[in-house]
Image (cartoon, rainbow, N blue to C red):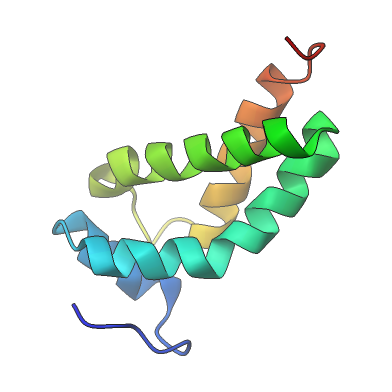
Length: 95
């Protein structure tokens, strides 16, 4: 899939990701990473750890995309749920 315009719904992009479209996933990352990073910084309190949490969110989204049902939940809600789970498990002291 070529570069995605900003008006393509995230749900449509995830539908393409389900089919292995890495370009669509790059657009998902571009659109969601600022929000996910901000939430991660708020949760873990450390920019470096927040970057790692953000990376892990997108790894999990890529892996789980084939099972994600866009009719049941928004993509943004899904991503925020993942960052909250990962951020909560990463709130211990820095290594």
